[in-house]
Amino acid sequence: MSHASGIPAVTAVPVARTSKYPPWAFYGVLFGVVSAASILLWGPIGVSGTYPRFIGALMRAFDPSYAEANPYLVRMGSLLKPETWLVVGLLIGGFIGARANREKTPKLEMVHPGEASPANRYRNAFIGGFLIILGARIAGGCTSGHIISGITQLSISGFIFAIGTFATGIISAKMLHARRAAGV
Amino acid sequence: MSASIYALLVGVAMGFFIQRVRASSPAMIASNLRLENLSVIKFMALTIAVGMVVVYALSLLMPQAMHFDIKPTYVIGVLLGGLVFGVGFGVGGYCPGTCVVGAGEGRKDAFFAILGGVVGALAFTLVYTTLIAPIVPLASYGKITLADVVHLPTMVVALVVGVIFLVVIRALPTEVKKAK
Image (cartoon, rainbow over all chains, first blue to last red; front, side, top):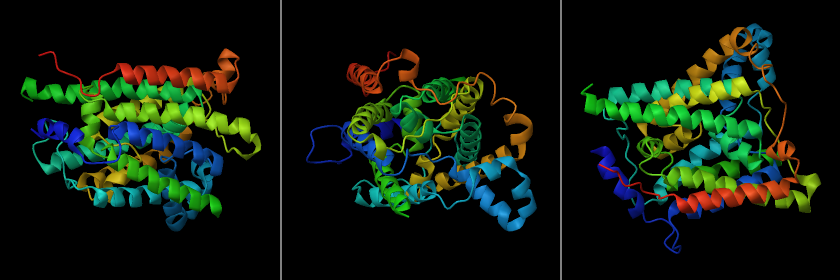
């Protein structure tokens, strides 16, 4: 049900009223210009590195000797980086976007048919969050760093990461959807 | 200092765009990954196509000013990381940035995704030396771009790839009609 009711709303979202283009096209062009401007002004956008830098900040507070001995935390450095401010900006941008939207953002949307209760959704969100950061750190970047910034800069690593991500992303999303038909 | 301010402003714009195209909705991400609705995939592809042409045009005008940062290509690790990432993307419906945008919107499950990400970063930090560091040198080619591989000027490659992306975006439907 959530999918059936969610999809028509996509085209009905009253964004960019002055534009005859769909939101994805209008904001896609804007985001392209912004991501290029970012490389001109300070560097390519990237989000996932902030997570281990946050772990590094916690470790330095609670177990400084471990933080100094862990080569990865040393390499990632402190949170005093522009990327941290980018992540703060995402939080603000999401807040502003939701307030500017006439349509109310749902506090909770079920994603897969197997999610019978909010607890199921929270569990899947947690598992998903765990795997995306684990995977992103293995690869050295995520959707923003590897796919958006990476392919924008024509980096080979960005193309490889995108192929891996969409391969298992498509398979896992389709499998979780098919569980309804199987009665699981 | 000014870099931090630019990064904050870019983050606000990025978060706003992501929210407006509903890329911060995990249900929307799942319908894109099921290939039922391609709007977010088209949004990303268009961002990349426009970005590559603009950024390499800017680099022709002011090469000294650019802050390019090409990530190294270590084929096994990047592919493995992408495969793990994709499972998380499919199950959770969030990526590391969109869950922060979702939290800004007030989505409850976004906070669980961020918490999962923090635990994932901790797990990664703990296994880095034993499991990750050994695979990084495998099939490693350094910071290479498509322009290095095909031996053409970056602006030419950016235009060709950008146009290919635009043609594919135009050719694909946004809402895919189910056969059944």
